[in-house]
Length: 236
Figure 1 (cartoon, helix red, strand yellow):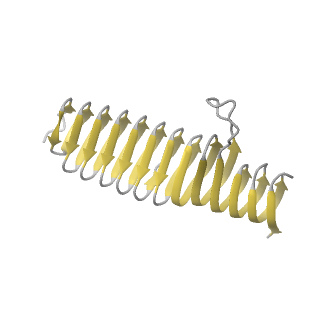
Figure 2 (cartoon, helix red, strand yellow):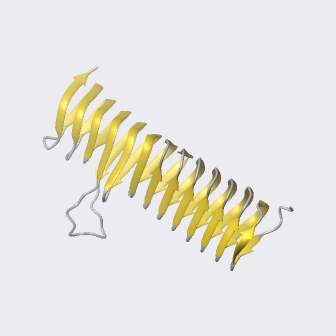
Figure 3 (cartoon, one colour):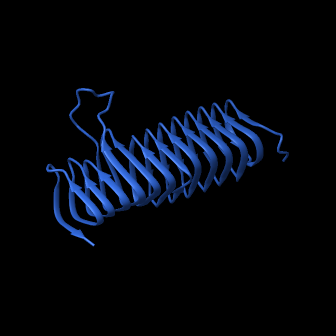
């Protein structure tokens, strides 16, 4: 199949995979084998039965890739599900992303929500939405703004980790603030608010308001807000 072909689906039906320039789905389309394309746009509903590799992804509707997915630039305004591993190099999520195994890439911006059953690995991870990560969240820089609900990860690791509460502009009168829960948080430079963790370990550790921490281990500096509860603190 030539690389100069486009796959445009306006109605409904099943189509073969292969190599395309652009895949655009405005109706309801199924792609039954591996697909590789420069651009993948979904405004309706799509299902890819196998694996997908693409330069750019734009999901305004609902997309389901049952195998592995690799993409250069990803914008999710609707809902996207990946059955196995997703390598989304530069990702922005305003809607919902669900990944069955590992999620990785360079830059992640989360304003909606993500749910990942494995590990999440990025260079920079910036979330002002919500996340549920069953494995390890690791990035060089992690910035989390807690606007609403509970964000969770098994473990969080990075060089610089900043977790701050942020009132939602959509709910100016709402009293509920977002929270973060993790078993272990480990990094060089850590600042936390509204966080519950069993262990926090770092060189410089600053515990802001609203935290409940079992053990804090630090090597250089530690500061603790009076409203937070720390069971044990140790300089190592």
